[in-house]
Image (cartoon, rainbow, N blue to C red; front, side, top):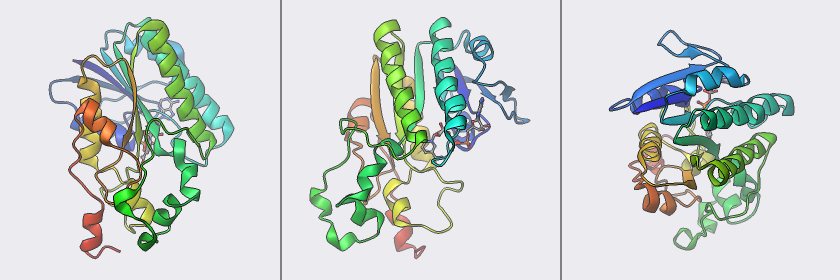
Length: 255
Ligand SMILES: NC(=O)c1ccc[n+]([C@@H]2O[C@H](COP(=O)([O-])OP(=O)(O)OC[C@H]3O[C@@H](n4cnc5c(N)ncnc54)[C@H](O)[C@@H]3O)[C@@H](O)[C@H]2O)c1
């Protein structure tokens, strides 16, 4: 299978290129090319992306400004115009599917109210974990930043391209993928939102391989005890079966 990964020099891009390579021929592009074969290309330039998307079956679109505090100018160029260019290039090149990197930040404002605020503050004794209402892909968005708004733009653009052009689009609302496979200082935020490297790779692989899927949105976090995003939907539709739980670090005395 011919796969193109945008943002291939980045943190998640490297994991996807390495972890998803079996049985797939992966080409990667990045505005900051690395010496491992990633091609220099800028998603702000439609012609560059169109050239590289030709002949590809699936495009995993990761390139972005991934910073929650990024300025509107940066978000507009990379996450709005850049994402439009990727979808439009895929349409013109008859790509079958786009796997789009979204984020838990699209509903992050819910964490300002109980019971989610208790969890992100580490006040676990105030939470009835067995009856916690999970935030699901059907929960109305509450973005916390221009960054999160741009990811909702990408999801909605994907919906439009599915309905209008038949492009298959899988949106993955990733939790936190830290630089190492665990952060130097675990926090309540980490225990809720961690997405381990192997769970990330599994989720992306299953999204690439999912059969007759037209459009869908999935939260992507590990099987964390204190997560408050629903992962039953990716379990049922994609067969996502996360193997990690951030809680295991707590018992090892990492907090
Ligand atoms: N790391 C996380 O915890 C996390 C969580 C949720 C969502 N995401 C999303 O996943 C994706 C990858 O995130 P990451 O953590 O690997 O970020 P990263 O910054 O490590 O990687 C992003 C890559 O995109 C490239 N890029 C930026 N602008 C570009 C352009 N104009 N043209 C081509 N390439 C460009 C960068 O050079 C970089 O290599 C992003 O879309 C991000 O929003 C990440």
